[in-house]
Amino acid sequence: LLDAATNADKNEWVSFPANFGTLGISRADMPQVKSEHRGALIAYLKGNGIDYVTTDVPAAELKPTQAEFSSRKAERWGEDRNNSDRSVLVSSDGYILDGHHQWVAALANGERVKAIRFAAPIRQLLAETYQFPSVQRSEGSATESGRQKAREDFSEALAELGSILRDFANVARMVPED
Image (cartoon, rainbow, N blue to C red; front, side, top):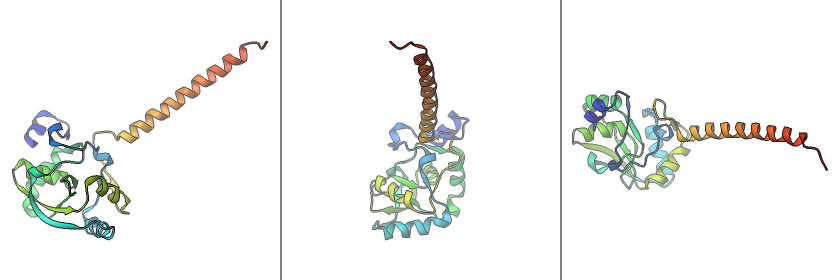
C-alpha cells in the first residue's frame, strides 16, 4: 500500500482502495484527538457507557474509516513504530477511529497493532467522539471537505437565484397591466 502510494502519486494524500472497506469519510471530517487528550477521550467514552479493552490485533483485520491517508505520515510511523506505545482506537466492528497512519505502517509490514477496542460500532463511536470537548477537525488533507464544498455550491446557487429573480422582477415591471 505504501509503495504503491509513494510510486503512483506525487501528492502526499492518497485515497484508500475500494477493496479496503473504507467508510470513505474525508479526513477533514474525521475527529482528530491530540495525543495529550486521548486518555481524557477514553475516560469520556467510558463515562458515556462505552467500555473498551486493550488488545493486540493483526493490522489486516482492521478497516479504515477515513477516505485517504498521508503517505508521508504513514512512512514516518513506519520508522518510529518501535519507539511508540500508542494504540490505534478501534470500534467494535473493526473500523479505525484514530490512528490510521500508524495502522497503515503496520499493515504495510504485515504486523500486528496495539489497539483500544471500544464496545460500540463506528457510527456510534463517531457520534460520541464529535461531542468530546477537545476533538478537532483535521488539517492538511488535500481532499476538500464535502460539507464545505456543498456550502460553497449552495451559496453560489443562492446568488445565481437572486440574480434571476431580480431580472424577472425588472421584466415584470415593464409589462403593462390590463
